Every structure is written in C-alpha cells, then in structure tokens.
Length: 333
Image (cartoon, rainbow, N blue to C red; front, side, top):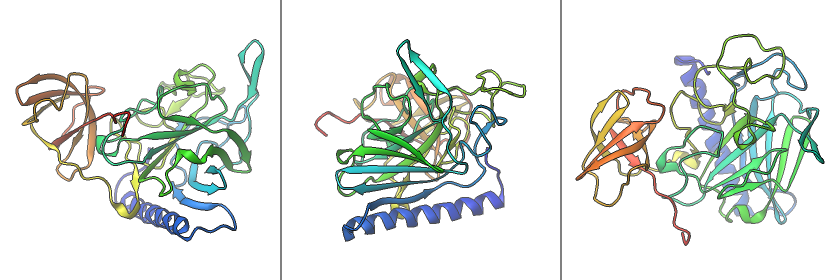
C-alpha cells in the first residue's frame, strides 16, 4: 500500500502531471500523423516505483520488481495497436503450465488489463472476473485489452492480445487497430495481476493471511493492505474504493449525482431519484462532497423516489454526499 501524508500527496501530484502530459503527447502524435514509426496514442502512462502490493521472496521466476509496473504506452503501427507495459525487473517466463493433457504453455507471471473509456456515459462498472474491483460509474469502461499468456477468458468487450512477447522489462501485446477509435481513448486504467492456471479469470487471488511464503503459494503470499488482488495499478489501490481512470487534461467526467439523504454504516439512502432510472441489483458509485469516489454500492430496495443501497463488501463509509448509478451501454450505442 502506498504511504500517506505530505510526501505521498506531492508524489501523486507529480505523477498526475506526468500522466496528463503523456496523454496530451499521445493526442499530439495522432494529430501529426507521423508515418516514420509507431504513432503514440497514450505516452508513458506512469506508475510510481516500489508501490507493488505483493510481498513474495524470489522464487520460480518471481523477483523483486517482477510485478512493479513503471509505465504503459499505447501506439499504432500500421493495422496494429501496440500496448507496452514496462516493469522494474526484466521479464522471465515461468516453467510450463499444463492447461490440458495436450496443451502446456510457458507463461509470464503477470497479467495486465488495460481498461478503456471510449465513449462518454454508459459502460461497465465491474472489472473482469477474478479482479474484484470496480471503477466509478461516471468512468465506466467500454473495452479492456488483456495481456496474458492464458487467453481463454471470454467476456463482453474483452480483447486478448493477438501476439504477446517479452523484451527486457517490457511486456508487449499486439491488438487489431479496431480496438481503438482514431481519436484514441478518453480515459485509461492499467492494472497488474498474477497469472494463474486455475484462478477465476485466470488470475491468482493473493491472500492477506499470515506467514512467510517460500514458494508461489496462494495461502502464503501476502498482499499489502486489504482490497482486490491487484498487485499494482496506474490508480491508487485503496480498500473498498473504485479504481479511477485517468483522463487527458484532468477532464474527468462530472455527472450529476443524486443526493445522499442518510448514511448508516454500509447502508446509504439516496433521494430523489427519477422514477424508472434504477432497479434492484444495480450498481452505483458513492461520492464525497468533492465528487471523489468513496465506494461501490448495490441497490437493495426502491420506495417511491428513494433508493436504498448497501456498500459492496459492507464496509462502513464516511462523508457520503451523492450517488451516481451505473448504466449499461445499449448494443446500438
């Protein structure tokens, strides 16, 4: 877990400045239409050093820095979109993993998801299976590009790399040009997880149990702090909070939120909510007074124009001021 306090705040501000500059550079490169090499779409989406949340000794291709993401770059080259995730340590394939009697692969230890907000408004709030996190409803993702050696997960709006390779510290995935519109994405979030032949969604759930792990073991590899099995990300990984996307020029979506009328532990009441815009089981993002996401909640009841929600994970929250409800994009959108 990243540190807190003045030093942390200063570092986050510096990271955001670098990130916004990188996104602006990507837009300029697209406009210039440079034909001499790859056209940068998103340049050096950065992540601070040494903030990886997995605690694990060197073992079986896992070394200090294996999961520590440094930056992510998206570029176009001909008919391809190239996603490059750079880590602090050189990549090493692990021993072959047998997926079936006649199918074995030598896998990279990390899986990288790159969530893209391509259109304003509706989209997905839940991450892919096994990731156990959400994004803010106002920053819903439309497509996710996955860099993984195990590419048999099938989900709506998921695209696996057509080719995956390791070059030094870079994990490089090649995708068809159709995964991105000409203007590029509005917002981007990259997360790092551990590849698993058996875990939900082909990622390993790392426990917060006690004990020093001496082998790559589900029961003994510990995660710093609570939260999803995300080992590193281009957003702060905080317990029970959605992971925010990053937008060029800091222009994060600012939707109108329905006001919170009561908050008691994990239960939140919201009113007035226009009739017909919510349903039981629908997800919502709880915001504080500044509009920052506090938690994801699920609609448990509706009475007139009042909606009752329960925070996912049932963790009590403080400072709830508003709620934004998720909206799935219609097929024709």
